[in-house]
Length: 367
Ligand SMILES: [Zn+2]
Image 1 (tube, rainbow, N blue to C red):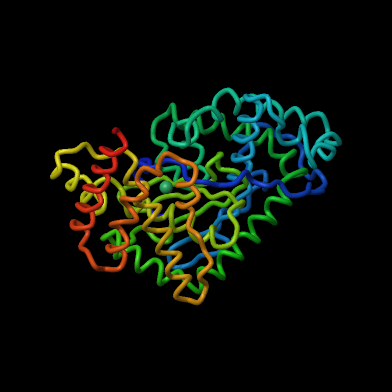
Image 2: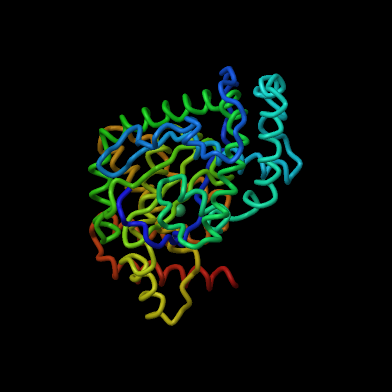
């Protein structure tokens, strides 16, 4: 990794959208190949291959990483355990494989889930408990600077080492296969559309890509939202995406997350929205910027696909409108922002029109 990750910070967004619950493919049947060596880093156990991107494109480096997937599975299992819901290895297709493992492997997994359930799973993805292990696993460990953080990362790594034999024996092969197929399918879409979409987003967000290629780790779950991004300074970021995004939604979600890197605090679209609100003497609606991001990137993907002869794609924002409070922005956005996407307005003009329309809508709603 380059020396660009000095100080991690979180995208103002948070986790993203709209993912359907991840489907769990059939169980893997790998024989247990490793004994239990607690607290030895997974890499030195040969559990994680040297971290290398599976596929690199001009804008993205896609990873199918054992340790990052194990971390994701433990977070998800900890969440389920906390809610007393069916969890990995205690229900479903992998249960019988798990039941046949040596007691040490089962205990290693179960105690690791206990730890995750208590310490890591309840945290937000932008809290230290989740952020520090994630960055370390992504090779951005230079961000982990203080002793307490280093110690915490080591504890989490120790629990993952304890959980690794079970995950490797009963789950990894199926998830590895799913991740590879997902990346392969997206790779062919990117080969056709990446340059066009990326160039338009750069124009629309008014700021150049930096810190390329952006690392993207593909895992089973991420969280109930299915994707999130971390912005790193001075440039770049790290993206997590669930392999449950299918077809062209995968193309949108990878560009959606990447767009967060073009729409940080102080970036042109954020500034334009803030200035438009201030000119109208109204507070800036908290989440409007994220709706604008969804719409801008989703519509760009849709339009590029349509121009390439595929008019069928419906961006994620429309299903969100159908079931969320963001619907209050819908008319304002659809009445003003397309003109900006078509180049018929400057960014300040479009932001002013959007904010005025949002202000009217809000007044109307209150009546
Ligand atoms: Zn987002």
